[in-house]
Image (cartoon, rainbow, N blue to C red; front, side):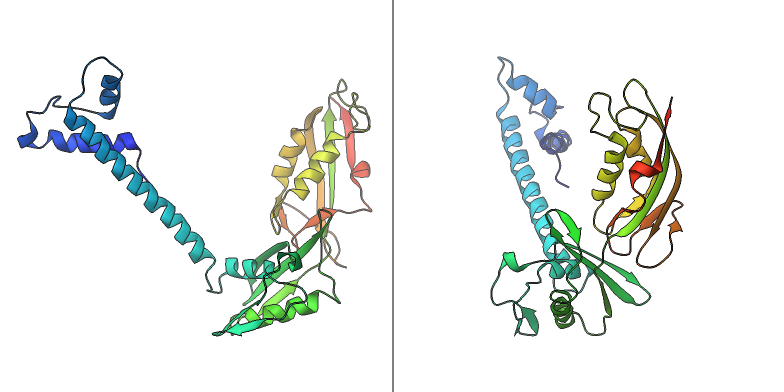
Length: 288
């Protein structure tokens, strides 16, 4: 990390104070704070101090340039053709529906770059049991949805098979959201909320429901839902005095609902409240 300009000047001034041949240069002990203070006064600053400041500035600029260069190299390395998890995620998002791949020196690429044909908007990869699970999804009107099983998933699977590293087993998952069922006892301020959880000032607004749905939708793709974090979000909702989570379950596909004890990572990479257990029916409001 690049040092602050004043820290570089102080280091140079300290080094100068230890040089016997420079003992005649005043002040004997100098610092950036002292120099900047002298510049704001009518007195003149010694030329050697100004030269030292110029040198310190040049060193500071040099260190900043190296810092920027290192950041650029880190990005290049992270996205390099190395078969890393980040690389697979980046390549999944580069998939172009309807385009054929061309091979150039052993690397498959698209001859035409068409951002409009990139349908994969969400991607994540996890390693488990000797294989990589690549979770992908697209978006429709801001809603996360799976790839079409007939027209989109087969070409995407062929694309991944073409670019994957030899010996790497990749299981592609694109599915409807995992279902969630959460139940709360919410102790509320009767001066702010109605018994059904609506705002007194705006009966069409339900702060607790919105807090939960917003929290779930704002999770990163394939992010982990942490119950305490969700309860913290409910606690911040208008009119809430004390939210008590009484039950939380999640499941996907035909599997039965399973209790969530601490956190939950979805199968599909995203999740939503079970439409058969809406928040309007699972939140119990109690006047505080």
